[in-house]
Length: 87
Image (cartoon, rainbow, N blue to C red; front, side):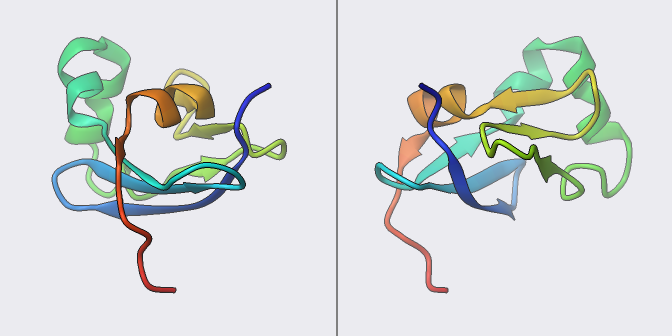
């Protein structure tokens, strides 16, 4: 079962702060994906696109387009555990 995304906030340097319904919040570094996955390079070259993400209806995927997305299990597994941000 995929973890469900509760909250996402873009941070500087192509990082995302993510909270899930269950589990600890994480910071996920999208920069690594931008450098290694060709489709992700648009997040760096198209101004403002990085902050223009959406979470799908099931809250198990974060996406920018039909070619650029990150499933919630990847975000949780490879994110660095963080302290909760103020609401």
